[in-house]
Amino acid sequence: MKQIDVSDETYDRLRFAAQVFGVSITEVVERMVQPHRAAGAESASPEPPEAAEQARQVPVHVVYQNTRVQGLFEPDTNLLKITTGDLAGRTYSSPSSAAIAVVEKMNPGRAFPQTNGRTFWVVDSTGKTLRSILGKR
Image (cartoon, rainbow, N blue to C red):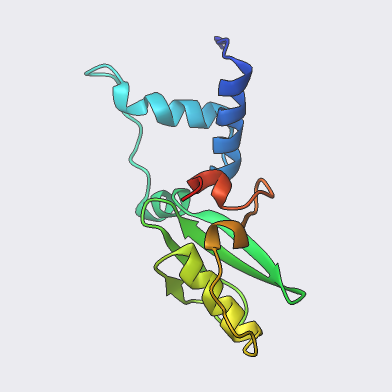
């Protein structure tokens, strides 16, 4: 097996991508170069649609009012689907709309449920907020 040298910053980015997608660093690199295979090279079997869908979903959670709520965030579409609790199965158009729904459901007496989803939701694999993926607005 051949080895390559990368900077510490590049390695950290590869490790983060591997954590987000739940694969090895080697698989991240293989996925990155797969479209650039030489013509006539043996191609890998196509990824099943379910696997491709899951690869684009980032597991997230929040602990609000001492209750953990899980979700799946899709960076490509900005959709967030809540997967546990009273709101399980509902999909929201943004992390903020999902955060507002959680606050309204779990704390109906709160006068203003508006919540920044980028700082509300936490990425399971890193423990950092969604802002770490999406950046500031």
